[in-house]
Image (cartoon, rainbow, N blue to C red; front, side, top):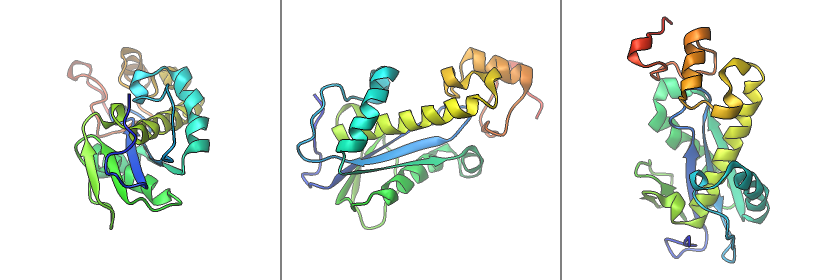
Length: 199
């Protein structure tokens, strides 16, 4: 059973990201403030539920949240500032979109940078502990998946609609065969050492 609140403050925002380990596409974050009476029996860490359930939850969270924000930070910026900074930037951008200013921020993971004038706490595996972080994890994952499905149309040979840019054998084989695209993260190890890629 996920907990509703960590800080005891009503306007507590949960934030999480998706796509950190991918070879292509953005890192996507969401921030969500849920109402006090919010209940949902399916909601959990997005990695623990099926794609079908995530897509069912997306409109429920969007309709029932007090407010939410979703933000992409794209591969060019990931390559410039590194994936950790890009993940935190995406979370900050999502929080900045909230129509209500949160009193407290709870963050999935163990790394975050102070957000101006709002206290925060990082919570390891927070997406499996708190409803607002789980809701943020579902929005981040679904918005990113939809984006990857869209750019799949442009480069179908990488099968992003299925692997979403993660380093599957199939994705790496396609990189070896076709090279890289404008969506690939050039600072990532796109191929194992034995499959050297000439850029």
